Length: 361
Image (cartoon, rainbow, N blue to C red; front, side, top):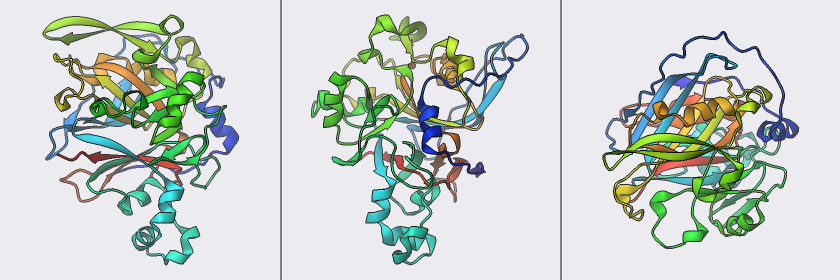
């Protein structure tokens, strides 16, 4: 199954503009009218209990928005049973020359000819029992697998933190709670420009600089400086209103350019027990790739809605933009499918990748 686009790579200046805050391309709003009801059709993947897909979905935006709707595909996975792994493409290609060469029928000595898109990395089998692979950080320059901003894998820094780069650092572990049994609540993220959080960033074993921040982490937000909405969900059989902190002000809707985008998000599952060390109380992770060019406010509209989660217990926790434009791509391999599902551009050279793999029992 293939849902792909033709590659049109960005230069470094265009990438920095894409992850920045104030690009002004305005388009006429659609006519006023009733907004169709939204529903995301989450389907449990064949042979799985904690991995769901929502492929080829439509999200309708409020009347007066820039566009009527956008298309996207997404996966949802329980972090008690699945985990994220991070790889730097340049380092992976160097250490796995023979694997990549064999999968592309090229002799290892001609590594400069390697294709290093999402699909090519997937075919090189970077991990055992991999279910999904998604583009993470932007390349620093066109056609080269070097990350724009911080990339650290297994404690080794592959590129440095960029002060004027993306606004967040995704950290797959948590230095603040090292060894305290909270692995089912991870990953987390830190603000790239926050000096106190940079000390934690420096301690992350696996980290990549991405952004902007679409929904802020409620545990690490200066709540008086962020737009807050109330989100209703059910917990312990009772209605509960939880705050959601928006990273993208609505007034910026027409001031942001639209791109294909990939997003990572975590939810608050509304578990009755508060022991966050338990596998059964794990958060859900989400990977979303849009098949329509969207701005960040439009994504935020979806990610802050109960119709996206389609579960009365779940609530948004945080969400981060990853790559955009033609770098947005996702590969998903289901048990009952011979070939992987491709969403977006899976052939363009990537800088870093996030893999969803099965946890040890």
